[in-house]
Image 1: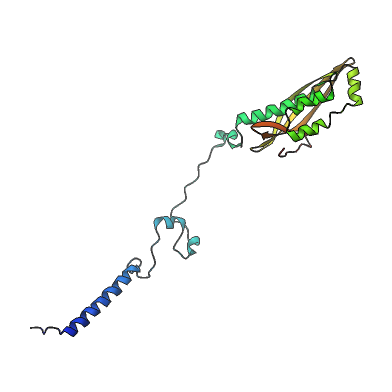
Image 2 (image 1 turned 90 degrees about the vertical axis):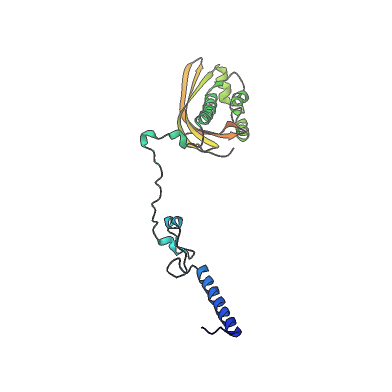
Length: 221
């Protein structure tokens, strides 16, 4: 019959058992059986797809095990060009109508009226700053008086040829402008291309700049 342990021996045995259990619990909390006992956590599937191996940040050079999803592409014949523009088709048309209207007004002159009235038709389509610039050009000239004596009248026409540049608030068009002047001596035609910059102000398109096509510029009005 085994000899029972004394009270002191029992205390020593239970104390040693507690120490062993605590040590074993700490070992498990450190991931003792997760990856062969090295204490490192196995990467998840998402980490493997990104090529990440752990918190050290050294996994950037490890290739992903899952291939990235290819982005969709569009065949050339199916490309929708208007979808790439920062403005809708209706907005571009509205901007073009302003540019074309201004250019037609530029070529339309009734010399029996004052220069101020001539420029007024363009100022109504221009930004405030550009309208002021036009107003400074409205002084009567000897040429105007000469044309008035001939009872000359010019009819202006304009047609947009090219959309030169575009962003969400500014569009530059190249516009062909024709001005046919009739007086007592007959007819005369002026024809040329102009760059017309229109900008969006208060929901409306207004002309910011109007110059020969090779000198036009854009701005913020």
